[in-house]
Image (cartoon, rainbow, N blue to C red; front, side):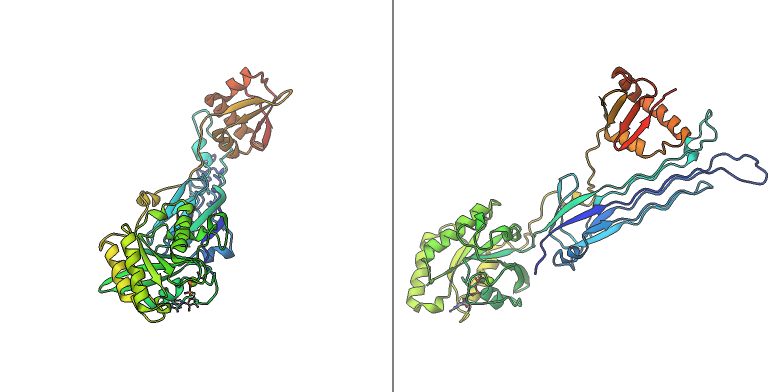
Length: 426
Ligand SMILES: Nc1nc2c(ncn2[C@@H]2O[C@H](COP(=O)(O)OP(=O)(O)OP(=O)(O)O)[C@@H](O)[C@H]2O)c(=O)[nH]1
Ligand SMILES: [Mg+2]
């Protein structure tokens, strides 16, 4: 089974707490503050690994947590950074990150941070000022980013084989490449994409055999059409059309598949296409030649029309040559623009620095805003000195003025996130 989708929960490591500590030395009776900072939490990082073929390794564990940052220590020692959690994914993995933005990993070794660790808290050393020489508080580390992200694999094939079920796609893949797909005389034998490599002279191309398409696939008929995502990177399609189909006729069967390709909506119908009239061993030679001539005459745009038989091998060398001829020699596998950026790209939930004050009944006010929530999360409100410091910061930022405008009086309750405390600014 090919695992081409995964939803996983990622959680950056929590930052380590800053520490409250004072110098203790025999000859210094009352030393100054020397509490170090907590270390940053580790990140959760996707790493493109060319050895991987699919997302199966993600199916087993659904939660990926990076390591916590170490707490600060005395003597100004800072905590160690938390360990990153690396998640190997195959080339062609598209990611929808925590903030909903999309990125793709294409090249071996490429990295993408999907959940950043929380920052570490400052130790008490940092809060020393001329008026506060012995701060007895330090900051707590922050939670890392967390949430669910979605991964989708889009196989990196140059050429896609399409056609109705039973058209002979897998038989062809087996003839042209070393792949060993299942072949059988019933529809939907192939239920997931299979890749093979065809070679000609010194060149190689990756070819993808996918499940059959039927009328209404876009609406979910048969196996649906989701697997067409694996053809999005292709530069060429080869459509197999049975010359003597048990149902329908070659022309209408061909149209059906074209319509489903267009119905998918990713522009697959605009790719260059070779039409391979398949199973020509089932009709007389002059008949197959006439068919090829007839289709060639009508298909001005097609990159080629040929008759083939995987049973006898007829036309297969010609098909191989036509495939290589249709694909320009040096053209790289289609890469999304901005892939280089992905390396340095970081998902960060939109940080707005503003805040809002909302009265919540008699003597209660809610203050919302990411920056304020982080500030509160950093401090231990049971610690009077920390609270004092916090009040100073809230005043600087303008929160207290805004509260007062809303009718706040000293001693009223203030709610920030899930923390509620009495605010009595001096
Ligand atoms: N006579 C003849 N039979 C063929 C040829 N190619 C394939 N077949 C037969 O056609 C049937 C379907 O072949 P597959 O290769 O499984 O077809 P497919 O297009 O992969 O089918 P799905 O995976 O179900 O979409 C099998 O019984 C094959 O043996 C051919 O060139 N000549
Ligand atoms: Mg098949």
